[in-house]
Every structure is written in structure tokens, then in C-alpha cells.
Length: 88
Image (cartoon, rainbow, N blue to C red; front, top):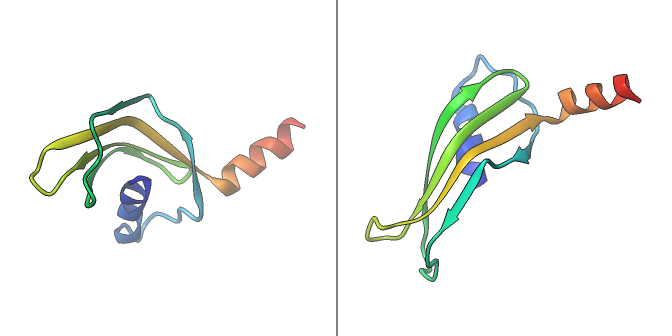
């Protein structure tokens, strides 16, 4: 489901995002996830060259919400590497 949020950058050609890794999740709420097929819907709430943030909802085939992932944040591997090098 995290790839759903990151895939939005594929369509935004003005962002040179590179590789992004998950950094944090503000809240995770999960219901009974026993369905075989799950659909993900992502909403981008913030985007920069260094990170992307958003909310992700998971649904079954009947449209019932199964999970909410709020405040998902993924950061640029390149930016993280530069920060580590400067601080060490």
C-alpha cells in the first residue's frame, strides 16, 4: 500500500524524487483484513524534493474501509545520506 502513495510521483515529472524509504507513520488503524483483494487509495498531503507525506486507505472489493494509514512519510535516500554524512 505504501507504493500507492509513492507511485503518485511517477506522474509528476517536475519532481526528481529518486529512491524514497518510509520514515514514519503518524497513525495506523486496521480492521479485519481477511479479504483476498485489497484496494489502496492514497492522498498526497505534502511533497518536496526530499520527502512525500500522505494518507493511505485500504478497501475490500465491496468498498468497505479496512485500514487507514495517516501521516505516512517517505524520504529521499540521497537527502538522508547527506544528513548522516554531515552529522557524523
